[in-house]
Image (cartoon, rainbow, N blue to C red; front, side, top):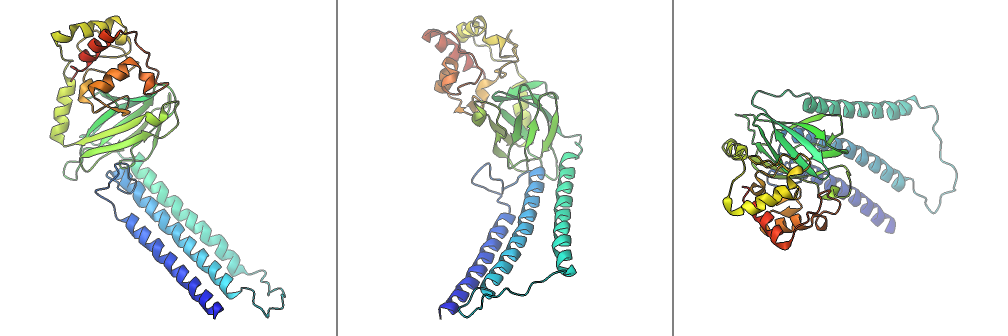
Length: 351
């Protein structure tokens, strides 16, 4: 009775495992268009991400099938050839020189590896060798410790940390092509729902492209350890309708606001040498070490996504950036409490 129960339990367990595996595979194979997480790798929203997603599902199915077959044969052998009470402990018959078996365990793995290799090579070719159409938006992304610089050469503007791109649909394909550079060490540009990881290596330009197919905010992360604040080198990609993107471009092309009421803060920005690191178009500030601040207050976050862009957080960041991002390489300005308020008030006008 116990032996029959054991056999039944083992068979049921095997079929339950197969059912669970198939359920998980089918679930992952259905793209989650409205994913809860903006970094969900199973909810691709761009052609490169779709290609990688389909390849990953195919690999999962192949390797899963291999696992199920091997596990089933192993379970069968364990059940059928288990030790019984009346066994004489003699060695079972041995099989030698079976050409069929040797061909099977040699040819089949080779064929599987070839199929996986060809499938992967096709995806790499489609993603890396795609030609940019005339409507494509070109952006140069420069990674710094520990923030992102975005140069829109065709529009004559520079911004930081928050990448804005137009949505791309089948009627009006508008991909965004990124030239990836590094100003210091190795970084990695990775927005899971839009594309795979691509490294930014000093003195070795790389490229990638995305064509987001729905509007919204897509989050990412520098995917390679690049120093103390690697974990807070966040990526924010805003996908907008073409009209909203064009409006954003026009606004970003404008020089900085000139507000006489904060002239004292603007003067301090220059005298305290902030202008040596930062650019504010329309003023003498033309530094390239830190982010462009011309339209600082148009951004949702500061410190590369580490904090919401609020007056309180901005004041704290100017006062002591190392309290928020230790090792952020931004020097602490020598400002009195009154001067800190004046500089912050000036920055708050940069819309």
